[in-house]
Length: 199
Image 1 (cartoon, helix red, strand yellow):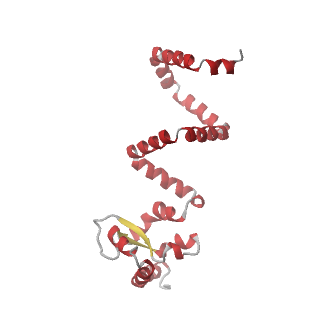
Image 2 (cartoon, helix red, strand yellow):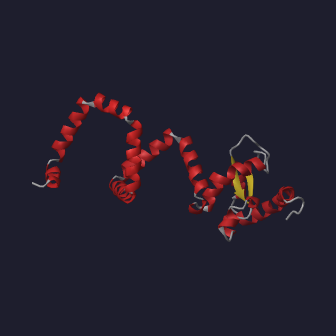
Image 3 (tube, helix red, strand yellow):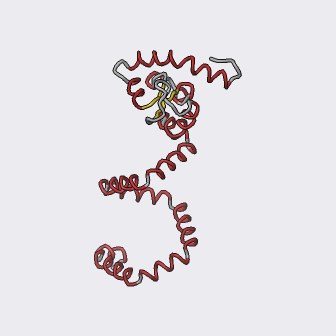
């Protein structure tokens, strides 16, 4: 019988033997991994580099067959490591800006500099105690390009309550009003950056 056919016919039996062997030799295996940690890591990196397409295909197939299990694992990982997820996301977005949607780029890359520019307080109510977000003065729906969406001069710091107000029912009219309020403030910032030239 060919080896592949034998494995297919005796999956459960082989799995039980492997599990029993692992339990009997757990200490031996763990000590081997500890002693050869760097060599094993190097071998794994080389394997991943040489088999990127196969690994990606295997992962896609697994996800399709185990959607609920994969989703539950991701949720559990995000709960356990929220800070790590944020740092990884920021690093990825900063490294590959061309692959990132404009709004995500604002949230993960531009937001820290916008908050710092505005003194870490809401432009309208001046609070520093509430969660702060970046608001587009000219609505995203009216922006003609990605460059306009990620333009720091089109962003302002608002607290969550003022941000809700900015996105009230009469959204576009309200944003025009906000734009009038923000115009003088933004002009001051631009004057500082361009040595008095302004808008």
